[in-house]
Image (cartoon, rainbow over all chains, first blue to last red; front, top):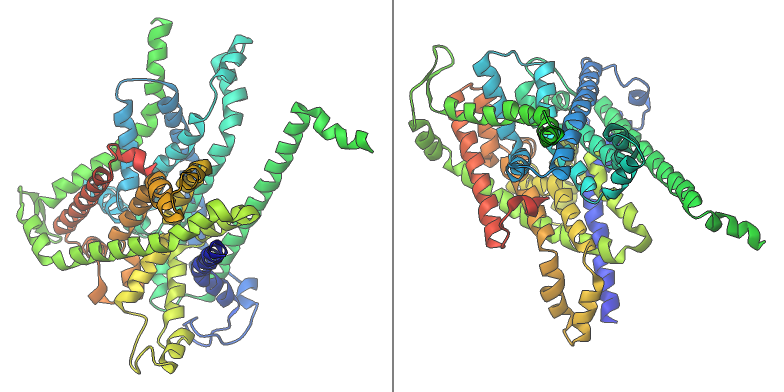
Length: 279
Length: 287
């Protein structure tokens, strides 16, 4: 009986914790349909679809969002290339200084963002580099690389190297073995790292704030607007981004399931054929 | 060059570009920071490097209040995160059954809405004329003039909220790895459920507890967004000072000194924390 109560309390606590996580998101979504009277989108005034129909009527919002998406795409691409190579080196090869390299790659993750941003701005000022789109891209690539290495390294560590050796025994050269064997196996790791890196970049405010100069991004736009009241169009775009991620995730789940099914069909044809035979 | 020599070079070729990026845009800026912090001067006449250590002593004495406040807020938020997250992670790992993946998805979903806009949403929720504050005034929990927004509570609650998923995920990962048969073995050997929990489950979850605490504490101690949006200047943290000194007042040497101090505090905390809990390798603890 006590165990039953314990489980019940645990479940109730968990639901409350998830509700805590979701209250502000619900508010963001809800207020994207609000029809505020003044500048402040704080009190509920009435339902409207206006902001959803014309999300870009607020000046500067479209440019900010475009910059954010573009920077996130480029930074992710760069970080994935640099990070995957590093992860391969760190897992596959024993060499002098590997421990130090691991530690060094980990350091940016242990540094507060405000320090990363301030340090980069210090460098740019000292070097006389004008801050803008390029410096944001540099900064985002810098912090994404470490996340990419950590994510892909975890995937590589569980990987059986015999598969590649088998491929090379069968006449594949190293590049072919990498392309045909290693890459497909670590692809889910790369996808996860890319999603993480993209999400971190699109949402980054602190480091961007230091390295942006006059360039605007979506978070910088929100920060600027926060003082005079954030327009409902921002809620619309945030909700739309969330929906896009949800759709991507759902597609990914479906794709994984289909792949698992077709793999099961290849490996164990009987498992698929059997139900048909039984009838 | 022999094949063997060439193979020995491969890891360095693979590491090279990424490592170079981190050296130029992480290590060198950190050292530049140190250089800037020892300069003297102001924005109009320019800055001179003079081994000016007084920036450090001045920064420490002028802003010790913000430094201690940051440490205090971050510590309280980390503890709150743990208290909220541990039962949740435990439930997801052992009790959620077919809802496990759905619950995990719900935990990471906040990452996909801008954290600034979620913090702005807290402004809406806690606003003086908002639903919550008015109901609390009605029932007398909050005085006539009582506020939710612009208080210490709001700032700490905001920090707790923003970094909660960073606590849940590592806890879940380490709990999920636990072989339940070990707990069963303990209870079979007449350990009470409480003893089995404190002697088996908790020690095995320790890597997740360390990782989660660090992943929460580090961003929390450097945060300035919550203090800015949910607090007033009386709740300002060290991050607010660094941000305004760099971007508004352009007092670069003292901003760089504060940022260096923050970095030193964080690294010290990480080292002490991992040592105390018996982890030699801090990287192993976090990842």
